[in-house]
Image 1 (spheres, rainbow, N blue to C red):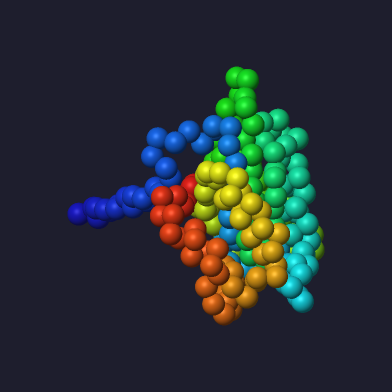
Image 2 (cartoon, helix red, strand yellow; image 1 turned 45 degrees about the vertical axis):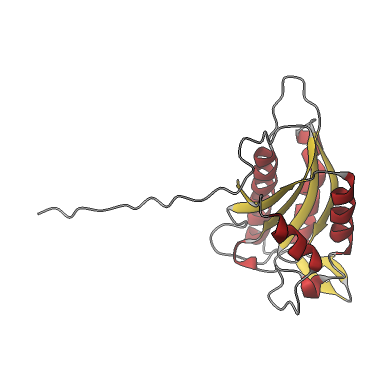
Length: 191
């Protein structure tokens, strides 16, 4: 008698804003993490981020996004040991539709390809599976107050590494993370 294989489909709960157009001209705060939160992008020493070759690859990929998509501007970013924070601005579009998911997907694909080549050449630390986690955190920036708070967080992230939720040795909860958690209406996108 043949074996019957039962496949259970896992439904991922989307915490994106229902009905929101993620190609709308707006500013978006995004965090994307290395799979397994491995410190492949560098190290924080003396409150300064020291990027590895992998961190330099990620920096170049972010800088190239506006060259690939004329409707995207990178406002601020921070490369951290195991994740990247960025504020992306989606600009008004004439017939083009660049969604936030497409921007993040492009960044991950570019860095993933270049990082694999770097590993092959013995210049980057190896990893298993994929470089980036499947999902990413997103926040639609609502006003100039939020934008300034997020910009400040990004710039000061290396100084506050001991509080960062992505730091496996964090010592306390960062008030910024508590603020993000309190919003409760946004979160993981897929790319």
